[in-house]
Image 1 (cartoon, rainbow, N blue to C red):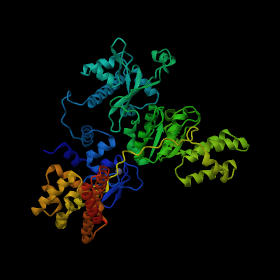
Image 2 (tube, protein in one colour):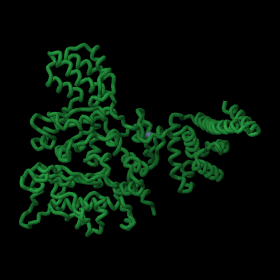
Image 3 (tube, rainbow, N blue to C red):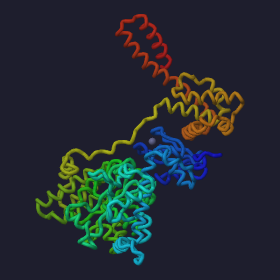
Image 4 (cartoon, rainbow, N blue to C red):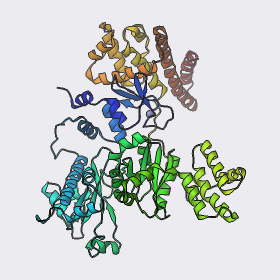
Length: 605
Ligand SMILES: [Zn+2]
């Protein structure tokens, strides 16, 4: 019987799978893209549809479906397998609930809670009433049935512990409910629901699993005497969120991302809005590449997730300055992450995108479509507020706009906006360039906004690359490499697994297996995947060399280089030993070491 992983591979094309995360371009037989796992400009991330394998020649990461999902979603093997199984429509054997990891129990608990909230929204207590007042209310606020269903919007009843009781019935413990962020322990030691009388927005991870909730008070608008309205007056929050938990890391999750990611990729742009309601309403209006950041600035992790699939950030701007600070911070960070930034300016009199959609979906579509470059936005705003005909006004306009220009990555763009500014305020470009040099960015600080740390950069070392090329070439065409394989200095292979592969392949070739497919079939299963991967790497590296003699020569060069690399490493170790022997004044040892050193040094000259 095929393993679930083999089933998945047979059903899910790796190119399609990876395409759903990053944009790939066709390059000969393969597909290419800038690597999503390390910062680079020239694409060295290659996907092979024929081999159903991916590999990055920049950072050395690579593998099959599961490796990609684990890497890009940050999932453990079991969770990545479950995600793939879901996408492939394969049923995995359920584990015993008791054996399931704490994490997957938490996810199941959150899923059960989401269902509880959904049904609480839809089921009216009074059988005479066909629709619950909460549902009627959010529909009146403009939410369509389809949207409520897609975003799984629900309702947390106005009671102390209805959810806790429902979850206990499903055999979850109070501690588990608390750890999932849904219950609070009272001073008396009893547990009560964190979310009460709130419209519930499930927060989902990139793969669509519920990892937390945002709960919003609504009914102060319909019923100013309601307890929640009183709570707001007394300083209670309009929104509350699940706290950080085992499965909810708010610095990584973006609300709506699971539903928006494909559209973001297609548009090569992401629309940033403030609240959950804005995000949901934006999708309803057909602007489906929107995500919500809910009041805080984008984190470097969130920017990194977005950067994989989009080059432009469109941020919705309120016309009044309040609430702009978080947006501004997000955009400064986005600039340092290399995004192109645009401002979508809400029409006069509308306070947020949800408002615009309620008024007219086309209004919000147009607002996003007509988003202007961020510098344009700040220039227009400054010109509207200060009089460029007066000296003081000119200075203020320049002072407000120059920091924005300074944040631009491209010199060409900087030049363009200096020219625009110069024209707008009637000051020559020369002095503006001088001002730009001393202009301070990001909230009056001269320190540039925190750069996005390059994700887990791990340079593949040269030896590893040489080994991959050599072994891969042998696996690709065993017959043509028959003579070479004997010449490979076994000690020069640093990687244990590669040495094992070399020995196994050599033994198989002695049994007269000279053809690639036959060799793969004859390999023991635990080595087959690695060998397929090595063959793929060699195939890409040797792509440009069509001539068989040149290919053969390439392999000889590779063997010689491997020997050299080994010798260099050995020399490094020898020189350490030599220094030690000198310190110990061990003449005898020193003499032996120096002889070996000279011998090796000559060899690699
Ligand atoms: Zn890479």
